[in-house]
Image (cartoon, rainbow over all chains, first blue to last red; front, side, top):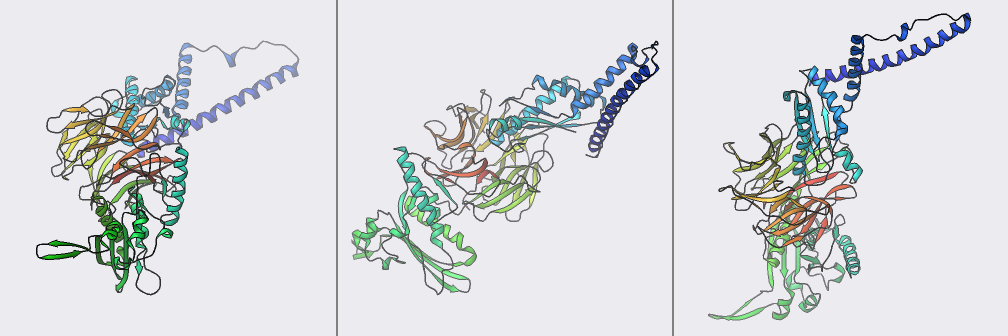
Length: 185
Length: 450
């Protein structure tokens, strides 16, 4: 519990820092371009300039940057922790593949982290049947993550069936939001 | 024609609700109203001041709710007798079309204790015999008042008034139907108040929703209450530890113990009719399967072993088999497993699927949730096979539970975007909704006879 809280806090802190970093770099870029244009105009002399600020990256640098971007994207994706399902169906939809890949990546890089996968259903059908259906949804997420290489010991599942809806209404829109799996660290 | 019946039902509804039970909504759906007229005369208070309790209000409500009887409006009564002796003219009562007349008195016996006397009178028989029938037996002429179907006198504590009123209803019901009344029973259910600090509450109330008491409040879901056969304990599922676990709680002492906490699903507990075993659903070994635990030894026996969903075990009254819901044939259907031979047979075939099967106390019927064309309704079929009948027209019906006398089914349904409890008679002709405060009411379980 404590550890997961810590991780949650650090993940959030990290994302805040990276966001802040993003915005500051872009600010610097705009100010620097404006100042260059000012100096160019001011001197009135056309000289040579090396593309130092925008030089070609070495392959190693490129890989590092890609990795960084990937991590950044995964960190963003990990903020998404809800997957939705079709009626009476437990298969993971293609649109959630990247989100699950991001979580799988995190779990593989942090072998001590654990994840609880909650399975939920809409209100149709009996409560006991829905508990079983909710578990089937959680299980298909676990299976998917396992196929990506996550250790099964890092994942626990709990099915709440129809007992914890996010939208307490009886219509198709509410139902589609309630049929879900939630990943909780 | 349908509109006419509906119109009549609405009128009847307003009369009834005005008369006895303002909270209860009554919806008579289709077919003719089979309820039999009965006269419930307000009991006469023999003391000074106002009567301490209105027994006949409770009795009338009970009789209406049974779906079998229809108390006539008080304004239609020819007089207000309090004993058989005060009935001057049986013909006037017979002409009302009532099958029986309930009369009674209430008198102070001692401080806080009251003597309640009542008689149930057959006006037709009274009309024939003039209140005294005579016949020749062995030594000569015998006269008796065989038009008095039942009559009793008891001393009742003030705190027992409501209970005693239900007792009167039981006596009336049994005298007129030959079947034991179930008005002194209870229901357990789960009440969910989404915005409360502890939203999930396990409740026990009288069968009519009165005297509701909280047995447990929890921040996490509570599910599937099931009564012990002696009516003193409940088994249920609690998620208080962020995982499903089965608990047993004594409803009088409120003491509780954890029965199971296997990995993953621990669900759908069902007490065996002899009280020694608990059927349940566990998914510790993979798919949800049915198990039976011996409560004394805690030994577990696996009953079903299938890779698809098996759930919702319920005992047949003889304790020899279980009915359960299984997806083994594709869509969920109700199956039956013989516990000795482990032989499994499918029992339901109507509609898209059938879930939540429960066998009636006489062992001759199966009540279930029938899914057909996207609708979930309560239905009944002969058990193990035979005639099938849809009983309800409400939406998203679930969790049917049968009264111990087999007369009624309580279930949960949607009304104005809220889960509420509703009653339907075993023939589907009578339906009533139990009133509730804001929140969802679900998972009703009708107690055994107490």
